[in-house]
Image (cartoon, rainbow, N blue to C red):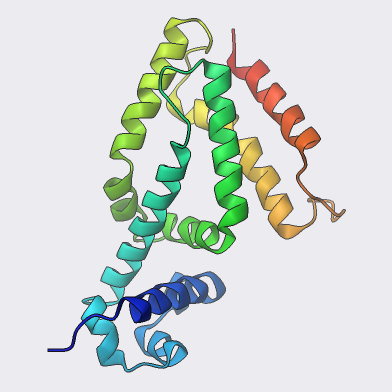
Length: 196
């Protein structure tokens, strides 16, 4: 039986991420992946049972890395303002430092594999963020709104700004780069919308 080569496995994951981003989930195939990696298709099956297994494992790994970074310096006991600022900074850092993984995760999250991936990775995150939100509401630092509205207001503008930054232009086509002034202006408006 052939053994796993960790370096080869990393190359497979990296090439798979690149291909998913450039060709989409539906255009991604094991034969093309093997060719891109310079290995036989049989070698892929040492690491993954099939295409679905590979896609789910990559999505779960990226998602776990993302959520791990979300908790850098974060505590559910933080004030709402400090905790939200921490989440913004962590999300910005992940998006800017791992743009390919961010794009891949977004594609996978909205694919037929999305529910399985999200179910696997969000347990601790949901619990900690729920504690954070409930504590902030109890301290009267956050207005009580349904989670979907909270998320849309708290992070929707941030992700739009990050998308403009990634594209290098705004919706009007003007050059765009996210800077501290724009980030702080948006953050302050979000705080105003969510605090009593």
